[in-house]
Image (cartoon, rainbow over all chains, first blue to last red; front, side, top):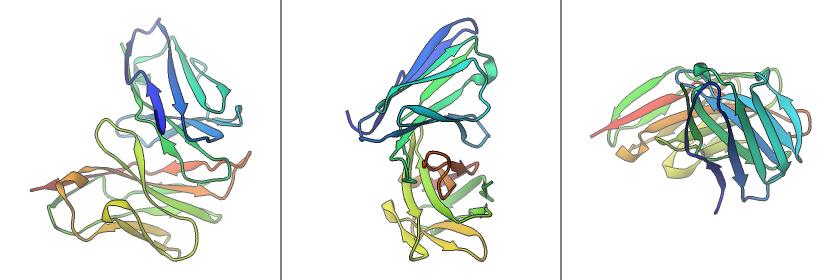
Length: 112
Length: 117
């Protein structure tokens, strides 16, 4: 595997389900990010992790719970989501102190 | 805080025609500027970036952009487009360092480029 990978690529869940999104980067980076991309809205930064420590939570509802066990892996745990949470969730990574971010292919989430 | 305005949400052009996708930014501090491309069902891929130095930046796939500080613009251009350039293009700005050192990218809403035969 190369670059940034995300699984699953597609996810359909009910409002009462609990699921997790996984991101893995194979680039040796030490910063990781979660973004939400909704139709007709700008890309929204959700969380930032530097060296496994969360450095930014952009007022994200608590039904989204991130986890970064090491610099290569990032998870987004989902529970009791709302239909408006349906979106493409993108993971990205970078070197700390470097501007260029590398993106994964995203997980298309549909909440019924 | 930084902000980005992409003036055109959709740009249709014919194959082999030139194209310019417009981007203006707002910031009270020095910035880095980026253009990313998103093909259908894919993540974002970096086209080019301005960090410092020459204001004319060349990127992949024949794209280039010019940083104009006085007009706070970073327009993307290609002299002759191909069908395969059909995608959504995002302009992004980042301030020099945030807490912890990582860059916080702020994205525009995107411009959908459609290249017609």
